[in-house]
Length: 305
Image (tube, helix red, strand yellow):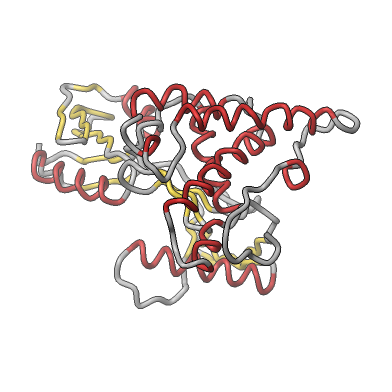
């Protein structure tokens, strides 16, 4: 099919419309890549679901080129705009100079520059090309979450003090939204509680202190779930589903409480959360800053912790 065009999307939702519209002749499995050759609008195409992450994108591209020898590649997917004056079809021009050669390094340079400008001026100028003419728009920064949430690689969910990163192969990524929110809430809690900073100030990660920080993140997680509109008990339900299947892994490590203990710590927070929500005139916000008890970590404390 060397006269075909290969169209790539990372997840099924991004390619669903094309898949419904095309006449599929086959399904081909290339490693972890799914490909559907066929016709769309009279053109031979190969529709590809690559999976999420730059490694999956690279692997699927090489596999499709080797197997189908397409004459062209198209990467399609979702994108969002943060300015009401941006129109569908606008071309955003990135003019931040960088000597970085790899795509992720360039993206990281742009992200750092963006955060720096917003921190300094509170605004971010962007230029788009509209009808072959450059148009400059100004984005005004808004207070937001103190962590970025990203899809990474592999099968882990981690927090580094600034980001929460979950891999596409993480075993709970296909769980229901409340259970997945519990995972993200646990990692987000690490950043809110500044655990990475605390480790840096106290000689690194040690088994006993890791256990305490993991417990603290577990206990804060249902507060965050409640404030995000989820049932805070979902945190315990996550461990009840995950634990029996993965009990020999991280949930039984000496650096973590057992999965059943973790569920119990979460359930112990529920009455405190409910009491917070019951206060005042129908408040829908559980004020963890006043109602949540911090773990007593040995060593040097952080200012403002």
